[in-house]
Image (cartoon, rainbow, N blue to C red):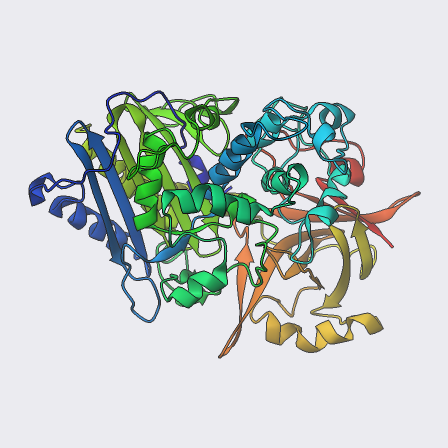
Length: 587
């Protein structure tokens, strides 16, 4: 788990009184601005302290009887080439897209012309014929609310889906996923369930309207979110899309916050057709903070267009999304914070005694936070293109703005976050054991084809001290040191496989001892100057254990690869397969 998971502060909607019905911006003196000179200096100092190579887009809105105070601004850099962030810079907002998904589902539920009608409690099995889970109880009883509140019993399993998938191929494999908790027992974040929810417009409407078209017609366009889109091509052609920036080859022992070699990350969805991508509903929205300001006003106004006062989203749908269903964290992680509950694309908590509704978003190169304090009529959005520390920077800035605007105690979140980052890194180091000086050799070379029915088939090829003699490995062997520069230690037997997944292009298993291997998911990224490798889950300790069994030979992956929720125990058992989060059988 990355450090920022510990500080993921989310929230949900409440009845709001006294908000102005129509947008009426008013002029204020500089010292009374939401983004005051003091706040500007604070944000610039935070970016400098974390040595951020990127920047931030910030939107703050506040309403009272006199109208709306609306301020948007950019800080730092949108690209490695030096372009500055502005209020029109576009960011991928990641899982902040999920709220649009839930609200679109609510619009379908409120559609009186649907036949048959659906409700929040409609069972997925009655709506989607292909729906089937391994747990028969969850398969039969899961409802729309169960999916949107992450309580189906399934972990994330983010490495199961590939760019080649569509909703049908994905749905067909859900029944092979091992549940990590009992149905409705634990909150476990799950992108797959939001992918399914985004399929509902196509299933329920006679027109078979795509999800992206439905959201554009019923939410984006009526609210005037003119630059907001699901399509990377549209965003790139606008000239306003920020680059995600990451830090490669950082000596973290020497400087945990160092920049190393700065890399521009390609837009994370390589192809998005007319209907968007597989992950449009889970994380596909692209937005500027100018549009985010309008979106925050809409949420504070419980679904009304801030310019026209027209109801675009019925208030009961906004309220449903922000009504807690599952417990994310039953204990507060700081005296200023409360336990956290989750509705649909919204987390709800208290911050210094004030109700806070928010959600985070994360895609390669981008991090976002969209938060509102309904009883204070305040909304804050912070978008970052710092791939490594964007989460911490956003939370620091978000809380700093809230503290200042609402006149709360000004907590030094910057120092707290930096201390937590150091503590987390030290914990990771303490959990890593060096490879034995004289490791036991593996029982077999273990190269060959393996399959998990949900994750698919992989071909493991031996590289390093010995090279694979399998004919089908010849292409990978010819290119491995070019496409994965610096990733392979030639002195250690290593198994490598191509893996056409959304979050990884290769999987690497480096021999540790006996039949135990350290596993990594890698993403090979091509540039004009060759390839570089983005390591996924670099702080997680994923282990692959091989075994020759009486009935089945294969390997099991453990250590968090399935992405179970907080407080969920790893699987246990007497055999490698029983203990595996994900089991691959030898073909």
